[in-house]
Amino acid sequence: MTRAEVTELVLTAKRMKGLTWKQIHEKVSVSTSPIVITAALLGQMRLEPNEAEKAAELLDLPEEAKIILTEIPYRGSLPQVPPTDPVIYRFYELIQVYGTTWKELIHEEFGDGIMSAIDFDMTMERQPDQKGDRVKIGMSGKFLSYKRY
Image 1 (cartoon, rainbow, N blue to C red):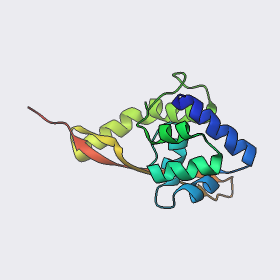
Image 2: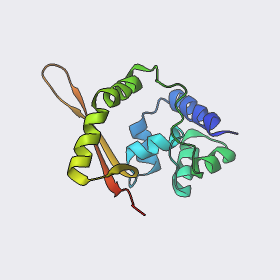
Image 3: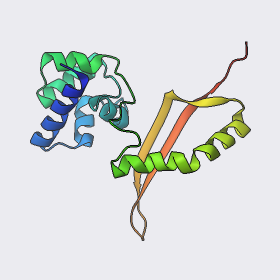
Image 4: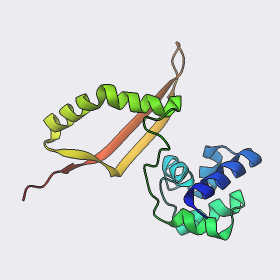
């Protein structure tokens, strides 16, 4: 069984049981971010063994899938670049338009380095707006300076 096959089992079970990602998160782990739990079940992060046990029970996953959910995944596996899904493409578009700006402003504020995607937190919330609700995403990553040898 592959990680992609586990993801398909997760998505099928979610659909067949009529569950939301929020409901799954509440059953799997209240101490881990719902974004991390969703990412793990979609194959981009890993679950702790107790989380994998709860997910497997909730989603009726086989034993092998439970083990795979705890393994370190091959991350960043978009099927196509640039992505064609409109939601994902908009993030790609943000990077194309604002990536150089973010880079310059990070370097000006912090120096030569990067924002970690490992020591990283992200939040997402609905922001009511009279012209139509907005998606508010907050990202916070540790700054990692490049070393000079």
